[in-house]
Image (cartoon, rainbow, N blue to C red):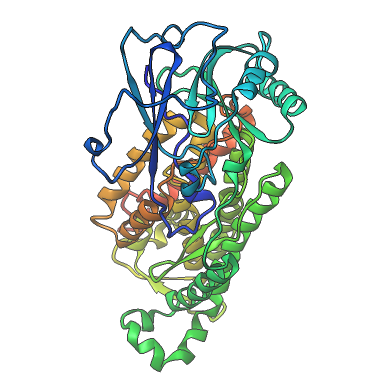
Length: 480
């Protein structure tokens, strides 16, 4: 039986600078007959043949896997006589520093016995076998009762018996979809420090984003970026549009932080990602601690897009209804409204026969500014990686289903990138900064309540309406 890679390598998403990808090392465990356990450290960049398999290896000292009072390891794991099982798994938990994998961070045998016999019990999680998992232990067994209540009981017992030295995770084995419990030392969850102060890096990204927001609203400068330095005074013409888009970005991020504070999730400083196409791609916000459960993750992930879509929709309607302040507005070709099902549908509903193919019309600039804010919210609602949409999908449907949906979404985005430069750059950013996987939650078995599931579906649906094109032609002739 292979040791399942339950907890994905995701510490670089939570505690490292988004541009840093730490090296991956592997711990290999060889489980042999008679309870001997051999642990090896190898680098995944080296050929496996360089690791010699020597039967003379000595068992781990003070290993937590030997249980002389119970069945032999071959009975617990179902191994046949003489069978060796090698298991390689990456860093399993958020915040595990790569160098710590070289150290002897193991739970003592006595502690494992306390966990198995006193912390876990018949009425919570009945342990049937145990396996090594990096610095901790993975317990296979049968879940008794509701997962949320079981997690609360086991966590309380573990704190009473062992203090705050260990952290419990109640997860799903992706191989057989059965519950497993993982206990690791809290010292392996310490956040990784960065060479550049977080506030400095976020401030630098923010300044560049201010520039691109101004530039995006000055069409005369977009055709020749080098002319910006000779015409800096023209940037002030883009101030109204930049303020509207920045306001929508602020509503989005503030909503994330307000809800996160309410549920006890710590968020880092947002890193705004500049874009010369739409002004800004949104912000990358790190989660600094372990999220308790899927419902809390759903609340935080959906709060930003819901607020952004709500305010953006109101501003978009206002732009179509209110006349331009200067009486002229912006002259646009109706074909631009084919780029969004939501914008095109609203334009057709409110403008009616005024909207005709090939006949330019004047619209309030607020329409374009609000539309840009809706696009920023929509692309962050794509169910992929660690975007808001990816976190929503994970919270609603679990790790396995969301991973498949993420792969499908990235594939569609890749096809779209052949025809749209915004899709291309967004795909690159997702791949290098936000591809995930999402960090493990304390308890991943309990589904969110239906009302929060509905909010998640609304966010994904609104994002789809903004991103999908409007396929129906606008009227060429006035209606009779």
